[in-house]
Length: 172
Image (tube, rainbow, N blue to C red; front, side, top):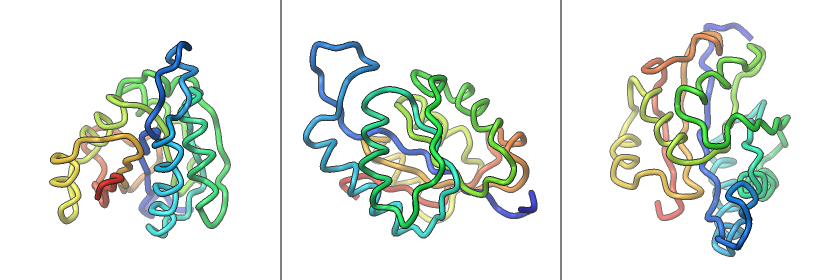
């Protein structure tokens, strides 16, 4: 793949989690989360993005979200469980994405707020259509995702270099 071809990044917040007496990292999905994650996967499949790579936090709720969502996709991308995504700031998430191999055209990052929403905000130097308005109005609820595009190698991804193409949340 040429680095001049547009790349896609999907920023996907985990589905609704439960609050049992376990550590935050081990919190499972709530019933609503188990219903919303496959819906988000179908919406992601409908977007037509052919994902090459999934980078998923190691938390129980993100792993469970991804396992339910990925079954709705036309093909399963290679998945990497990355502990640095858990509780990461937008800058730390950019550093993880900067390590993506350049043969990857499109990737999904399955993570947590406030990092995922902050990352969508800081990467978006431009916005197509009303995606930015919808994201600003709704915030980044559980199971929401944003689709961004940028051109260049992954190591060149930095604040303001991407275009927000689409946004979806369960109540959209």
